Image (cartoon, rainbow, N blue to C red; front, side, top):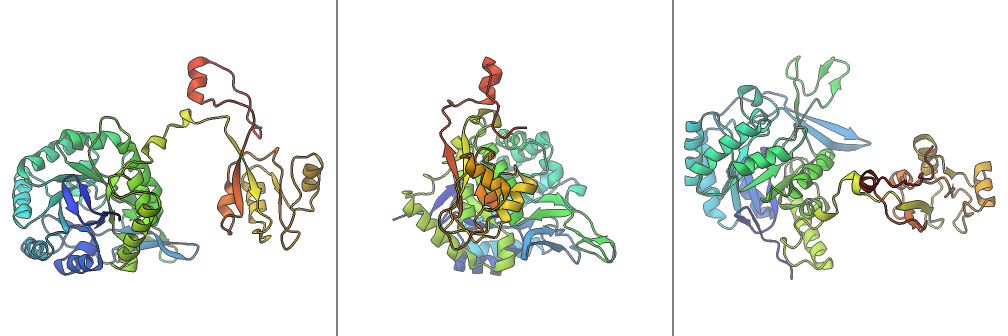
Length: 442
């Protein structure tokens, strides 16, 4: 039996899946429907002095037929009266006492922070999230990423919030910085109980090449917005892991950025997140995606011997190292399964044009020569003669071929026992010992 309940910085929820502060968490009716669908928590759309949004406000990137693989918005914080939001927060928490209701906040002055924090706590918030990340509209007003990019300001405002709040305080960090660690440490010094990251990335989603206007268009103009969606996951994972492995950090993380399914959530948890927040995928697919997320996470935990979320948190962090600590003498080569190969030769094209020219058509002079020299094996089996040949003497194990192959399991990277002991660049620098040239290096 696995237990999906989680405690992120003192904020408890029946599972680690939270709605991120965004349109899906804009109102009480929405959040309540999300809880009915199975979401464990919700971060309410950011409260502050209500603003007026523009139209249009969303843009999407379609990658090889996948709609919304990347997403962009120029939407700001709530445009609904604060009184309405607080009433709905109270009603939602009263109806769903076991679910986490976190209120996202963004105001300017110390007095405004004091007032809105008190009202949020009085409405029943289980926690607060300080929005120090919005990269458009609000930062021009001295809020959002304008705060998140200045560690001193981050620390000071965080300290205000912690002073005034009787519930846990999370700081939502901006990714629009060169190094996330100083900003996470600033939040910690300010007394934050945890952080959430990443917020959206400053971006222009595209250009209307007929109208000559960036997207999304507002009349005949546009502006930069916040990039999110599945395409930002690698950036988010990196920043989460950077904080999780920092010796001086040590407070909980709520991971955000490109979570589309249970596998994504597992990756965030293994790299240090105690909860995961989702926005774009809900906007594109609806609240019920959480059903598969819950089922998939439960099955993963069962098959991998985890009974609680805490047992998973940070499990992959020790394996995240610096480049200089990687073994320079570890080698792999590509092996093609002739029974699975469909003869598309995508690997041949990728290898010849983008890698190291070691994969050849079976009947080519290069393939025949490699086989003759004992550097390759003629494919044995398969339904046709279009199975490519790998010249292992030239293969550097880059795995580009595996990435472009459309057949799962057809190409595997196999370790080569080369007789050399492990050796790293940092060792080389420290000890001055000579390293043999890597094969394939020209």
